[in-house]
Image 1 (cartoon, rainbow over the protein chains, first blue to last red):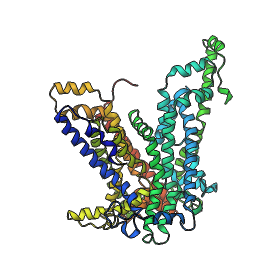
Image 2 (cartoon, each protein chain N blue to C red):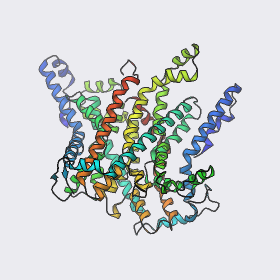
Image 3 (cartoon, rainbow over the protein chains, first blue to last red):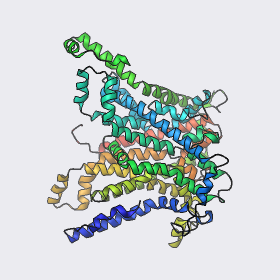
Length: 295
Length: 318
């Protein structure tokens, strides 16, 4: 994970002395920032193998005698609930969110990018407006609504918006992508008699794969990290996501006694996100970069 | 959904001259458009527009979720302005936004400029610096933050080594907010990636021409780089500012769920959460939410107004 991939530069001969020192200074600067950035991540890895009493006080990043007790303790679960329950719940939430976003946002984006209908520009402005709207204005009335519908303590309040394309960022990302697709393709399809549904499904969607992957991963990570939504809507420990499970862990039997368990759980909870990142970092970063350029 | 099918090509081409056929086509496009849009439209009405109206109404009522909302006029707002905790939450949030956002953006721009200088290793560093933006909002990282900023942990010891004895930041009302600032600055990678993409689009010829005219590094940055990336800078300033107004999770977890000590991390949304969901003051919380909306709208309006003065868009519209 650390500096191994940066080595090649140093071994390659450079023509000018001046360039070598410049490049060296560049790498030293970059590595210093890298050390600060990675410290908290390395810290959580090291700390989860330390006995609880050493976690705060020991300055050693990695323990001399790593122990597995923290992870073994996790297998016992938290307050009689297996930690797999929390992971299953988080996975259900994140997976459900991904499916919803992919369907609803791509349909909406197709309409904005490829269909000329009356009112399109007005609706597009409204959609962009919701991008800037603070979610908290909607929080209370949405809660009231779901409470009246007796949907508190279910995943409906958390997922409904994902199936109704309320995440404007992804609609926007897909619209930008679809607008850049060669127009000739769908024009040719139209002349061949294809309807919008065919063009959407057989031409536009396959070509949009990068944008779909970016949206899917961001959605997964956002749902996995989501804290406020589950905090407000879920109130039965058996339905808790990983984030809430960790909060319950903290509240339950003296954290001081089992600090190691909490830190080990923190690491385990980060792993899916870190793995997704390692596997798909190009999609994430390119998606992020284009969102800023075309705004 | 079968309605969106087009008529066969031959007949369509033959008829397209006639205005009646054009009209029919337009109607069909409208129908298709609104069918494709229907999830978004339902979501917009049900989860955005409707709740906004309801929230505005609640803001003028006394409502605890179980009574019928009772109209109280401006009571919630006058109570709010007189409430010392509300004032505190505004001050805390303002401090967080005003210190954290510029620091984060400066670091993002600085590191982007550094990375833009070399192609070798750039992709690796870019990815590594971006990673915190993905995990920064998680409960895990909030726990890590709480740990490394506690009494006698690394940050405290490093500061003691240089003679500042603040104890753990998380237990100290004068310092805890800065641990949240550090947390947001740590996530500088997201705006950095956007800056970097903007820097790549600055035409090389501009720099070459400036060098021929004898411009130094600072001059080139000030007169070429900055104007050329100003749209990206504007985008980052807007998004990061709006975003940091809404900080909740990390403040809630780092402060051990009570947004203290001494309300030192009582960010706006934390107080809104306490009022709405702990005290069941839905009317008061809605009034708070609308004040947040107004603040965000005001900042957005000021930024959009100011961009005429400092943001340069290229002539060609894509």
